[in-house]
Each structure stands twice: as structure tokens, then as C-alpha cells.
Length: 553
Image (tube, rainbow, N blue to C red; front, side, top):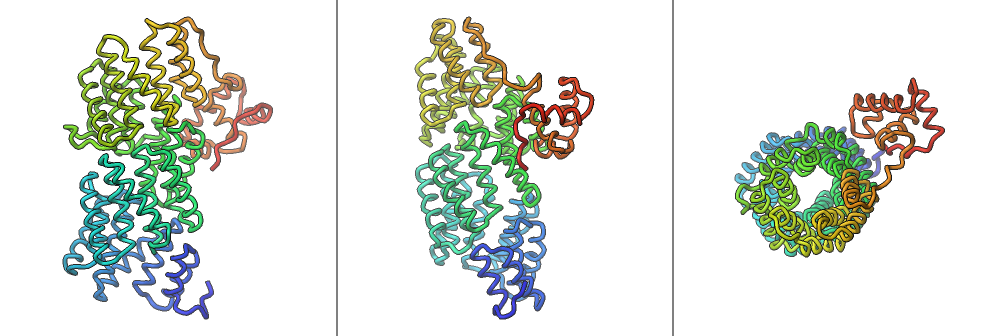
């Protein structure tokens, strides 16, 4: 890149970083390094490479910058670099040991430096890497205090958002959201200088909305985040926020949109941030279970079974397969043993535990789990958690014998509908119908039909089948089968559509997040069902029949 007449290339590169022109910044810093190796130029080049989603190439210049800062007697700058390396190793690759090594190095340098603002940046990273929400809040609070003493707005904004997210996880939702609102407004209004700080602050807000099931706030802030990330070309942050937002789309019944977001995000982070892939795959797996596509859900989760983020979809998959014992054991390993450490992170797992315990006739165990969920609902005052708690309580009461807890089912269903959560509302309505089927046939049939219609609209196959079975038992008929060409399943339709576009088995597998071997099996079944002999005949058949469009890559 030509740099003559532009002054100091390091200064020009830093200006380019500030406005989000990552390619120009890279050119300036490379030009500076061609003349002389400096820590500032190396650090700037690393920053530009990271934003260009070339994460692997960003590490060597940053490590070299650390060494030069140390050699030149600039320990505070060296601390900043060490903290960046720790955060990026854990965030991009999940390399906890390497990240911990850099964190310990930063701690030692801070102790040598004494009182400095870098101590606050150290606390901020400790908050992000904390093992639980209470510890995260403690470290973030310290970082905010240090930032205000030293007048460091970037640190204050970032730490305030970490503190707010931790409080939300602890169930102090109103207090935490107030902090997050302030942090994001301050960051996006231009008071924060670092785009990294602005981006991560926005992600903390969306993540907290997801944990609190605050869909309205999430939607509002996603518009702000979308605008910011597009204007400043913040590709890595954009992908993570979209994964989080997909949870809102799934809850609102916008499953097609959620699927597109998750598939795009998984492909985008696979090269530069492989540790983040599990987040999109786990969300997609949960959606697949709800759709009744259990084999695909299992494939998505393969290799990620030990990840905490995969706990809910994996336990839900076990339940759908009738493996209630495995589901309960998995959830119990992830939850605090005594319940005293329960927070909003426990809330999605406890309804699964209630269902698993009831499936093995452990009513007392289910009741204990339902009470834990009720306690979280009372502390957090989140309507979505309250609705889940009511449904859990109704399930336990029903299993305990006596009259069906109609009023509790009705309240849970009303809350889910008010929140715009169609899958959960239909689930509550179907269980209510099952509960009153023996005593109120007409009422049960009406609710079962409404639930069936909702499941059909969503594409929740297994649940729609359950509603249909109840209707048959009530003498109200059944639902028609899915509209698919010939005898093909929906998955076979998708494979055939991609096959007709000339894709190989491996390419189709990449698009659909399944193995090439599985695609081969699907192709074989397609040929058999359509009485065809070779792939070319299948392509010709697809051209003569309407098929769903192939998934975008």
C-alpha cells in the first residue's frame, strides 16, 4: 500500500483502526515494520489481523510486541498485550492452559508495577474468566472502581457491562440490565475509543438478554448492534451476537430465520474462532430436537458433549430418545449440588430435570427441581422463568395424583402466549389437554387441536404427532401427513435439492452439518424411493419437480 506523504505509518495505522478500516491499518503497520520493528507497529498489525478474521496470524506479532515492551521497560504496555493474548486464546481456541499462563504473567507484571490502571484491566479479564457469576461480579466491580479512579472510560464501560451481565446471571436482573443499558449507551455514543470495547459491551448486553429471556430488549439492542457492526466492519463480534440472537428467534417461533443465522455463524467462525463453533451448533441442535430431527441433533453435538453450553440440547435429546436417566444425570452434573448456587444459568436446565425425573417416576426429585426453579423465578422476576416454573409445578402436581391443576396450566399457557413463545405455549396447552382428557373430552380436543396447529406451523414433528395421537384417542381424528414429493422425507428433499445443484456428498454435508457418509445414505434412500439408478437420474427428477431451495453457504 502506498504510504509516501502520509506521515508516520504507525499513527496512520492507529487512525485506520479507530475508524474500522482494517485493511488500510494492516498496510500502514506492515509499511512501518518494513522500516523498523517496533512494539507499537507489531501490536497494531495484530489488531488489524484479528479484525480481518485472520486470528491465527494475529498471535505472532502480538507475542513479539509483548517481548519488546518488556525489553524496553514498559511493563504496563506488556500487561495489556498479555491480557489480550489470554483473552484471545480462550475465546478463539478454548485454550484454557495457554490463557491461564498469560493471565499469570500479567498478574506478576502488575504486582511489580504497583498502583496502575492495568490492575483494573486485569480485574476485567478475571471477571470474564470467572468460574461463576458471583466471582465475575466481584472482579468487575473492582475494575469499575479502578477505572473511575484513573479516568479510563474504555475500562469503565467494559467492566460495567461485565458487572451487569454477572448480576443478570445471579438473578438481580433489573439492577444488571440498568448497568448494561448505561454501558451500551456510553459505548455506542462515542465515549469509548476502542472498537473492541464497544463490540464486547454490546455482546454482553445481548448475552444478558438471552439469559433473562428479555426478548423485547434483545430485539431493540440487536438493531443497534447490527448498525454498529456493519458500519465498523466488526465481523467477529457480529457473528457471536447473531448466535445469541438466534435464541430469541427460536423462542419467538421464527425457526427458519434462526436456522439461517446459526448455519451462517457456524461457517463464519469455524476458521478464526473454532472455540465459538459449539455455541452455534448447540443452538442448532436444540432447534433440531424441537423439529424432531434427532439424528441430525446428535451429529451436531458429537464431540461437544462435555461442553456446558451443550448440556440443554444434549439432555433434551436424551429425553426425546426416551433416555430419561441419562438426561437427569447430565443435568445434575451441571447444576449446583445444593441449589444455593442456582442462578439464571440454571433456569433452562431445571425444566428438563423435572421432565426427566417424572419420566422415571421420581416425583420427589421432580418436585425438588420444580421448587428450585420457582425460587429462581421469584428472585429474578422474569416472566419467562415464571411461566416455566408454573408448567413444572403443574407437571409435578399432576404426577402426584388428585385433580388436574387446571388453573396452573392455564396461567402458564397464558404467560407463554403473552411472551410470544409459541412452542412453549403449545406444549403447555397439550399437557393441559392430556390432563383433562378423561373428564372434559370436548375441552381437551379443542386444546389439542390448537396445540397441533401450532406445532404444525413451527415444524415440530414429534410434538405434532403427540397431539394427533391424543386427538385420535379422543375420537377427533388425526392430522394429514406432511406435504412432500413422493415418499421423501424433508431431509431427503434438502439433500436432493443440493444434489441437483451439482454438489458432492462432502459439500452437501458441509451445508447441512452432517457427514459425507450420512449424505451417501440419504442419496441411496432417495434413489430407492424414486426407483432411480444413478445420481444423474435424481438430478433430472429434481428438475421436473418443485423442491425447497438449497441452504445458502
